[in-house]
Length: 229
Image (tube, rainbow, N blue to C red; front, side):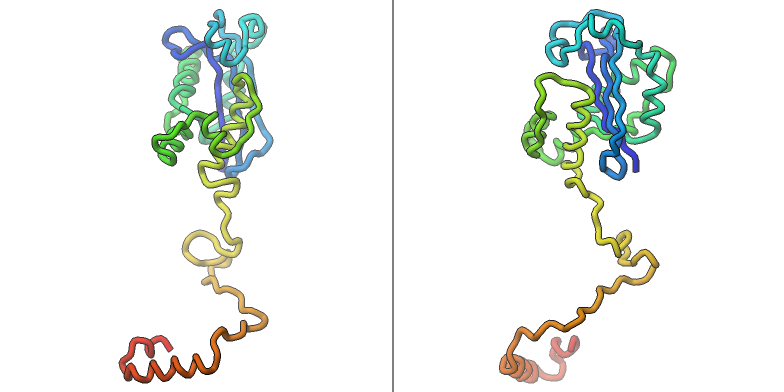
């Protein structure tokens, strides 16, 4: 199963008011584990950078002035994510911006069903608690070592948080001999545990065994115990 952990940085909060994406970072997971493949792109927003946004990610108008436009990198981005599920913290924000940018260049919209929102996952798992990415890192003991937000760095951090939210780094770990939930092994046969090479020694004494047998005899022929012995 392929998933893409994704984050964006923007000039503000609302694409309908002229805000744009300035950075995209993404990390590929296969069966919930990082593959080492990433996507990272700075983008020229074709507008000035507000001071409030600059304080968050440190991407200045000057720095972004020679970077490609979203229209020039959109297809590479779409090719990277494909039809994989998109793991995003506060997915409504990033999906809103991505679909606005795609709409402006006449590209197909990303379906909302493609997104997995880790913020919603965290709210369900820790109701009433702080569930920002930084708060979840503190909860799970994940070291961030960052002063500013960055799309690729935040994606890498979110990948670790996501793995913790779904149960740790090996959420799909099962006994290798058992496949699925029907109790059958890979050959389709009923699973039977292997016999011990040497039986375990009895844990009760002969006197205790005799006392138990005498007790059962007193219960009569219809004693429930005798149905299982």
